[in-house]
Length: 565
Length: 44
Image 1: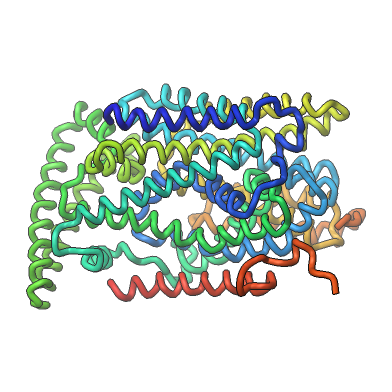
Image 2: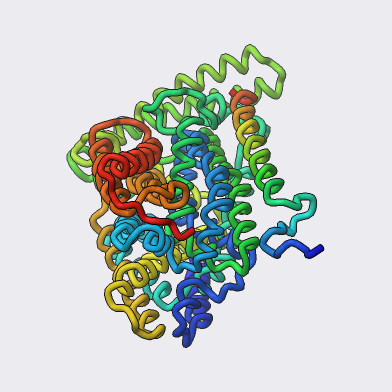
């Protein structure tokens, strides 16, 4: 990065912080601080919902997923449009009619205080840990770009986010997100355009897709009924729908975004905006990763994208083995590149037999190249067990090596804009939930300014918890998957509680409370013993919670409680 | 005849009721799945 890149990065970060502080100055009204001024239109809500979900992890890690595994990850989002319709029809009108600050406040009105506290507690636990992962992601970017220590980077970037978030209320979060997502899209589109321009002459987009398809990078829809496969049409539709229903419908970081809508119509349209654009957005980000994969068939990539980790190990007694693997990798890549160039020439010359032969030879060279890469990943894994994951470094590595200055600054700014926007939404929600569902429950009858101050303090507290978690987290998973796995462990049960609240009027709080605790324990136990796709835990947790609550209500004769809505 | 409340109108041209909006969203979703499946078949 040069001076121009740093100027773009620092200027934008300071502008975001300045905007947040300026737009929320002197705010002492609890409703305005937690829900906004109630004037947000559908586009602001839609972009705010999108920006809260699409963190730096999305833009940093998803292209790496596309590079490593192709388009299959898009199936993770297949349930989102269906879930958003359900939320728009059933959840949203109730939240708005009851004028709640948080989704868990509704559980208190519908059931009892202990169920509200349980719902809020599960959210705080899950989102507090998830917030750590989303601080960890931009810290990787910074430490790679600037050569800083990862722990120092986590603390510095985390504290910056905390200061910005504590200063900004809900309106400031939504407003800044609207501009941040513009910066993000501009950066990603620019990266896509440069990537296409850098593909070899004669290949073109169609040739690039053919090549990607030949290496199984375009398998977007898997119809297999297998439960073990991580992403299939069925796990995406069913598990993904439960995940999205829980995330968008019951996670306060999302509920808070659309509660601030000027009307029910604006909130609904904001959700439908996401229902339409979520899948295409994820598809294009994954496609970027697939195109990087194609690009690297012609330009030699590093054998391991986390270059600092490779260099550190290469200096140890594993150095000779790692260097030998790097040499194998380079030789196989040279061979593959020559075969692919022959393939392009044969295609252009209209010689299908020569094209097929060249493609087959390239496939054989690619297999040797992948073997060298896999062995390197095993050597670099902690303790030599498993496989070190470097897919999160693929996109940033490409940006730093192949994008012009100015554009590097724009992309790195886009990562940080994404990190700040999602982090602001998450910490804002964590602070709100702790204040409204726990602190105000314990210490009621205080002034609005007191609760606004309490909310700021709790926001800072959760920011520090997230930083601490990020410092100790060493994730073997790809980052975007780690976030979804963590969510899936908790979201199913939370969703079960809310579905019982919305649709099963004859179940009372006590049955739901104990059923939720038992179901969460069950999900934990299954997670550590089974090897099924994590998306299914959303279904299992939800079904177990609902089934157990109905059973408890029926068999133990727990007192029925009337629903207010 | 009183006009429907603000929340009941969608404000979208061609999609006057929420039922029509949801149907349109579902159709777009199905189209995406079909296109993604076709992309794989086309370039396999």
